[in-house]
Image 1 (cartoon, rainbow, N blue to C red):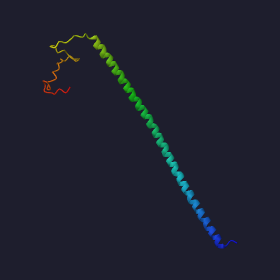
Image 2 (image 1 turned 180 degrees about the vertical axis):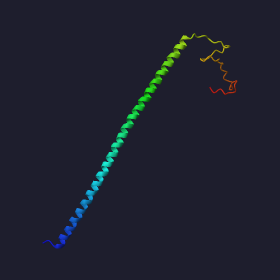
Image 3 (image 1 turned 120 degrees about the horizontal axis):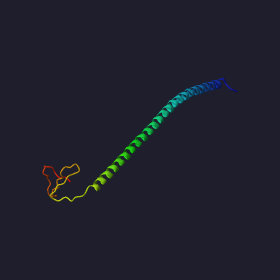
Length: 126
């Protein structure tokens, strides 16, 4: 037969189980709320990452476009300079004549390799 003591122990255990279940439900609710907040934060961060990737793609495209334009400009400049050089008659310069550079300034002939100091007092590093 079941004694009164056994019933009290059973009642205490049931009461403890109910209390534990209530605590776990509260904890579950709290954790679910935190999870929702974290999920919202993750969604915001994913949106920022997507925006960052899009802006990076735009930046890369802008840089590549600028590089292409510079390449075209360089190609045009090379074509123009080669056509200018081919249209200019080539006259051999005598050793006595100094000639002129592109800007029309006189070209001074290089000194011999043994000379380390130019007339202006600068070192010849080339």
